[in-house]
Image (cartoon, rainbow, N blue to C red; front, side, top):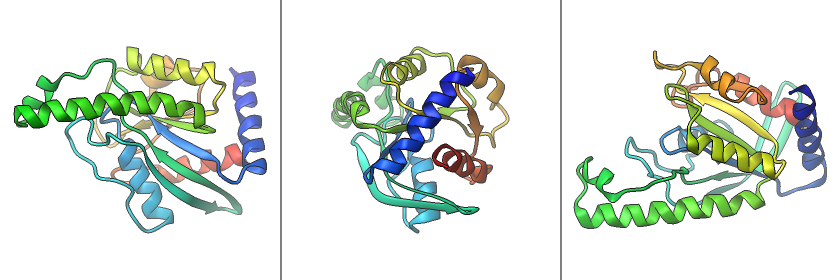
Length: 209
């Protein structure tokens, strides 16, 4: 595990030294908190939001990019283009949207857009230099979707920072996420409330130091 982390660290550091348009992608299943984290990062360092959030799955259905995000803390700094991606799912059924009150036409359109979003997210993996995988800390991390995401990242040798979001909730369990993917460092945060967000920024900065 240590050797894998070192390989990723070295690649990450070299990327930030050589490239001016480093793409840092936020990936994960729907409703894990990717856009909430994107908004937190953009508010902290740019003073503005990146996208809208919702309790209904697949609120983000298109790739969103915020260019030239610059983080500086404790004498360390890094710049990157932040890419928020639609949540990846193995199945998208319009009937699920009917259950939350959408009309049939709207539900079918949302399912269509969400399916395209998943395809786009996977395509964009080839453009990513670094990926933050955002997982819901209250759910079982060892799912087909998460295994697929992590497997694709490993196959592409893309450096990864694993985030366990929603640690403000009682059901959150970082140990289960760490046990599911022991090859990665896991940072527990609450993107919504900013809890432990400094540790998240420290982890990013340490990768590029």
